[in-house]
Amino acid sequence: MTLRIAVQMDPIASINPLGDSTFAMMLEAQARGHELGYYTPGSLALRRDTVSAEVALITVFDKPKGEHFVLGEASRQDLAGYDVLLMRQDPPFDMNYITLTHLLERLHPKTLVVNPPAAVRNAPEKILVTDFPELMPPTLVTRDRGMIHAFRREHGNIIVKPLYGNGGAGVFFIQEGDHNLVSLLELFEQSFREPFMVQKYLPDVRKGDKRIIIIDGEPIAGLNRIPADGEARSNMHVGGRPELSALTPRELEICAIIGPALKARDMIFVGIDVIGDYLTEINVTSPTGIREIKRFGGPDIAVLIWDAIQKRRV
Image (cartoon, rainbow, N blue to C red; front, side, top):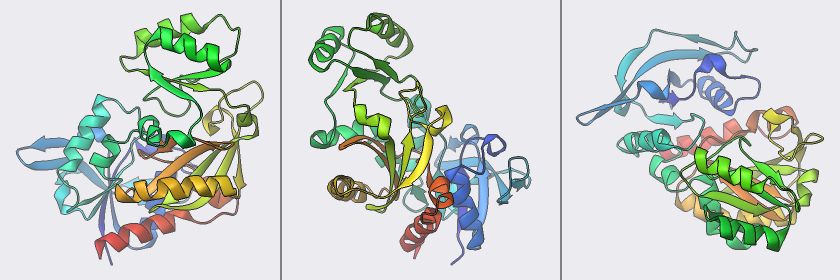
């Protein structure tokens, strides 16, 4: 089977190929003999009933940054002519991102968009997770200061974060007795029109924030990310230390509960975040971590992703 694949992603020259999950997916697609096209979201266009983009053929190499790709000449292509489209640009999940899902929805499922754009639009990571309140730590979504202060009085140490942020940006740990909460809320009110997410602080985060990769509704592997000293966030780009980690019975229980909901939405590639016994996020936009999992001796998840995609193109 040879597929025509278009990859919608951030500028490929700017990525770190040694740690980029999209790049791993491209390497595996190329190894299978598929045709790879690349474009950035800014070139996407809708005219009448045609969704197009400035697509260039691309060859990728498993080499350090600067040596990892060669591009052909770009030309405007009707994306309906592709078999598969990978929607892999990074959040923020803002009106631009939402608009792109509306455009790509016109292609799916004739052109298989991974993950499905309507499902992604209707399931942003910090909203989808609230479908499973029994799995979450105590959580509040609001802009109402009175409710936030009451939540803090109830739970003491809290985490405050933007509802549509990514990569740990804007995540604040407010300790009991800290006098900066009002100033932080003022900053959030000026910066974001949406409600904020407030959660009870989980001390287990010092042991790690585990990213679990789920393919086609089934858990595959876990990557524990341990925060650096003096840091409340565990994201790798802010110094979190990754390590391969077997899934615990509780984590398998969480996956068994949410797996059918992901499968019902035809979400092929999902990453969930678990701290201690609690589910904190379900990442469906552009999950990461698969290169690190392979590097630490885990499975080659890109292979499993393409097995799932090809199953749908038979």
